[in-house]
Amino acid sequence: MDDSNAGFRVPTLHFHVVMSRQTYRPLSNDGKTPDFSDIDGLIATAIEEAMKQARKDVPPDDETSEDREEREFKELRRLQRKQQRAAVNAAWLAHLIHRLCESNHF
Image 1 (cartoon, rainbow, N blue to C red):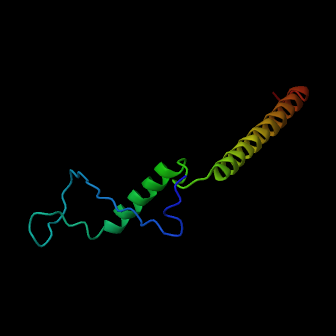
Image 2: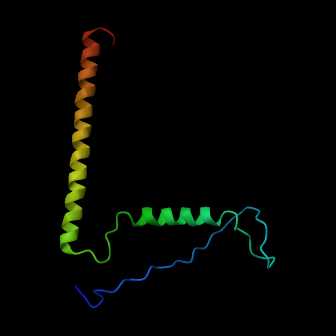
Image 3: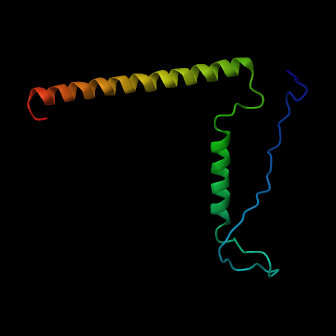
């Protein structure tokens, strides 16, 4: 791994987003560009959230092998807990159905 950037902070990346809108918007001062000033915060938030979701399962660029092992271990534990909850819920549901059948309410 190249540590030539150790101790330096990587700058935030900036993106240029192109939107295609098929709706009426008032025009800005130049008379050509649609004016999104009333909703630009909403647009920025939507784009930010979409980028977070897209990046969610991608490991950091500077992830070490130890970091990867820890991340994979945490994901495995999360999946094991999810499977355990599903098994407990299935057992409870089976028990409930059995009790209903025994009581002739089914």
